[in-house]
Amino acid sequence: MKKGLLTRFDTAFSRDQEEKIYVQNRIVEHAEEFYAWLEEGGYIYICGDASRMAKDVDKAIHKAVEIAGGKSEDEAKAYVEALKKAKRYLRDVY
Image (cartoon, rainbow, N blue to C red; front, side, top):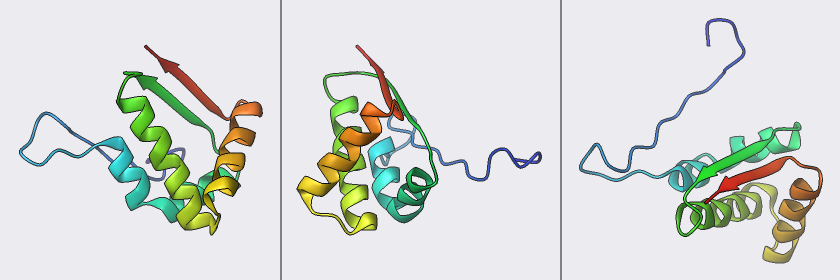
């Protein structure tokens, strides 16, 4: 952050505190900024559990695009598919 390469750092701890906070919560919570980053050419990298985490994060990404982008469910789906085709939404899930 001191060098200006990182402008924001959010945490999401689901195990180390009483209130569970997940990545998908943060994505929706900050939908406007998240979407703005995508519009500016940002990339998404998802790594981890395929059975729950990756699915929940994917749903949150779609929701953020709908909310902040003013898109319908189908438009958000097409937007996310375009990110995948452009290799701007990459997943390493297992």
